[in-house]
Structure formats: C-alpha cells, structure tokens
Image 1 (tube, rainbow, N blue to C red):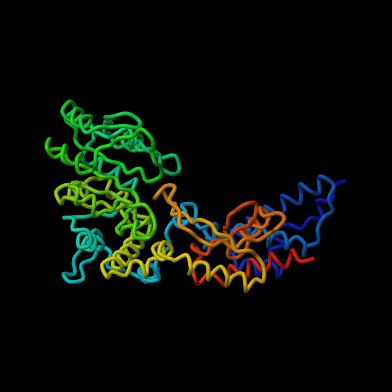
Image 2 (tube, rainbow, N blue to C red):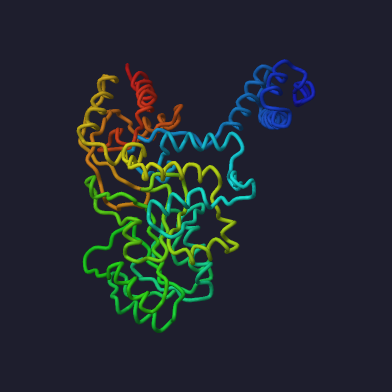
Length: 454
C-alpha cells in the first residue's frame, strides 16, 4: 500500500514557520505554486519507490524551487573575450553619465512629453533631435528603438508599393537571421536589384532608376562582411549624384553609427555619419549601441521634409524610443559635443587603449593571481562593425587541463565571467574588462585556481 497518505497537505505545510517565512519573502501565489510543484514531484518519486521526505527536507526543495523561479536571467556580465561590441553580451556599455541619466529618469517622473516652459503637452522627439542636428549638421532627426526599425519606418513611409533600388552587393543578413530584402518586403516596398553579386556599376543604378521610377535609392553598408577579389562598386557620392539627377531621394543605411574616425586607432576606416551627409544622402539610418557607444536605438537624420513624413507615419509610434533610451542617448551624444567621447564612452576607451597599457593590466592580473602566462593576442570590434579588423592585445592565459570546464564554471559565478579559448587554454583579454570589474574577475579566477590546487 502506498505511503502517500503520510505526505503533508498544502494546508498543513502553510501552517509551519518555514512557510510563514516564504510567504513573507515570495508572496502567497508563488509560494503556493512551489508547494504544489514540489509535492507533485514527491508523489511521483514515492510511486517510483522513494521514501516520504521529512518536512524540513520538503522545505529545502521548496526553497530551491522558489529561488530558481525568481532568479533574474538578465544579469550583468564581465566580458573578458576581447570582443568590444559583443552582441550576445548587450553590445556597448554605457558611460557613467548615461547610466546615471537612466537611473534619474527611471526612478521618478520626467519631462518626456511635457513642455516645462509652457506647461503644455510636449514631444519626446525633441530631447535627442536638437543634439543630433547640432552634432551632425542634419536638418532634422528621429530616434526609434533600433536600426532595423529605422529602415523599416523609412521604407514604409516613403516607398510603400513603390520601387526601391539597391545593389546586389548590399543584400545583407544581420544577426538573428534578419535580411535587408525581408525588411523591405515587410514595408511594402518593391525591391529592384542592380548589378551582380560582386560587381555593380553606376550605369546599373541609372538604368534601374530610369526604368522603374523608384521612390528611393537605398545603400546598405556591408558592416559585417567583406567582398574581396574581382569587385567593383561606385562611390557613395556617385550614386547619390545619380539619384538626385533623377530627383530620387537617397537613403543610406549606415548601421554602425561611427561618429569618429576609426583609422586613428589602428583600424580600417569605418564610414561615418558625417561622411554620408557630406556625400549628399537625404536620410541616414544608424544604430545607437554600436560604434556610437550608447543605448539600443535606431537613429534617422537628414532632410526635414522627409523626417516629418516619418514622424507622421502610424508605424513611428509602434517603434518609438522610450524615456530610458532617450536619456542614455542624450548623455552619450553630449560626450561627442563636449569632445570627450574617447575619454568617457567605454567603447572608445576600449578601442583607444594602447598595447602597453593593456599589457600592464595583464601583468597586474598575473601578479595578483600568482599564476597564468602572458600571450600576445588580438581583440576584435564585433557587433557587425569592421569585419576582420583586429587590435593587438595581451592575454592572460591559464594552463588548465580542461579549459572548457573552467569557462563553464566562470559563467556560473556571481558575477558571471565570459572568456574565450585560445590555443586550448582559458584566455582573458583586459581590453574589454571595465576597470571597476577587475577585482571581481580576479576573485572568480582565484576560486577556480584554488579548487584545482592538489
């Protein structure tokens, strides 16, 4: 005969001191869920031959269930991979000023859509627009929630059921399987491909424009790949000139959002927002959380008449940026206006670190740990920017027998540490570890080393 009748009921368990503490910490609904789930598991185990657990043992399982159910899955992580714009780790960290602005706006009311001077309803669009136009020289600007939304909005507002000319060399796929042709299809625009996979000529654009009478000519920056070998492509200014000659607006999907010249830091030149405008682009779309170094956002700048059409489109409300994004973006843009971006924005701090400085940090880590080897290595920009571009770095390498297990344990630490395998060893790149994270990183590694000591 089954012993299930000896299993305490939920009502009986709720009368215990242990349940009272859980009710106070987790609330009644969640505690009841835990009691039901654990009792169901125990019933199944008893039917399979297990013994009835004591009440204290039951509450160990109930506690475990509750803590597992309430642990956040979005956690701060120490990035020791050397990938600066690590898409899986949230891309660009915010500056301390941008983080503080987010906190201030998040913990109270704000002037998001309220004009303090007039006491009347205002517009959320003004907060970043004035900074963007002053910084870039564009006539107008609009901020939405990411760059894919920026392109989708532009195509929907300006080219629905009309042709949009784009080169076959630019039919890119970005992270997560999102493809430019599919975004264009969702907007209702009709894709007109020109050129070949590896070569496109100005005459290809001109012919397509004359034959289709498009609403837009679209240029998509190949920010996450390179075409090499037998290739050819007209300059941005040449394509813009052909578009304007036929009175067709030109949209440049720049992607990475560089406002500074990456070539000054030992990298290839990444096209900048200012260069797109100088070439004559009518609209420029780019990300806020890549080389700009701010929050996730899609930024559209350009001609005022076109931006106004985008602002009035119904989709604009669906993809608009929230107050936290606008607060962080505004502070990030101020760094550029104050000419302090390299000193204050973490992405540019990481890009600008000298090899000597990185080596000194790695040597310090080695001294504190009393273990590891220093190895020359390479950091990457990542985040769909500057493909195949690297920066010299110094790695701290641990000669652990099972490096994958070491990295797995570090990922489960508090805070989690994400590193990489280099030559079958666990490797840590100082370039992407924020200074305030160093102590926590070294403590985590120390625990691993101590556990491995015989």
